Length: 282
Image (cartoon, rainbow, N blue to C red):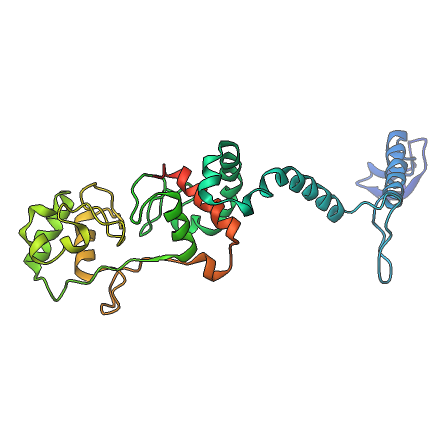
């Protein structure tokens, strides 16, 4: 400690550094003291008005009785009252009737966006643009048909299309020929298309059969899109789709949401309307 005398009017604490820096005992500035007292007064007032102080088995409820849960439930109740105008109509209506009502279908389109995000977007993309190996829902190309009843049936019961693997029926040269014919969007240009029975599912013109869920092979829209589309087409012809006899077969299953119990009947109707409007349904 320095033995030099204190040159300042206020007393010091005796803590001195380098003979020039000393700790004085001045009172804090008034603005600081005002802020200090205001802060503890605010804490006490807050604790009286709102839930705050813990107790042995509970907590102080505050003079207002406010809780975040109570506020959430009030807000949720207000939202449900607004939605009730539309929601109360839906259980007694078919998906087709909902679609035909412009005001109601517009409401359903907005409200079903969350349902689609929670249940469909993982496979079909957030905007229905599809992911690798899953159909695009934002176009007007439909494997099983795009009318509202068919879309509702697809969501309700699911879909498990099947295409047999042809690895044992076709040799390498034949596989190449058929794949090139399909990639040209003119599968019937190859005699093999008729000779090997491809027309039985895809039609003599190659435009598919919605009753079977067989793809249109003439529109350039690919169920299994890939950078090397020729190789992808050849793979599908070789190993098929959902063929239990081929361990390398394509896996393409749409789950049955009614059986899974995740969605109510009203939710399924909402999604059917949403998908119909999303993809320009038939």
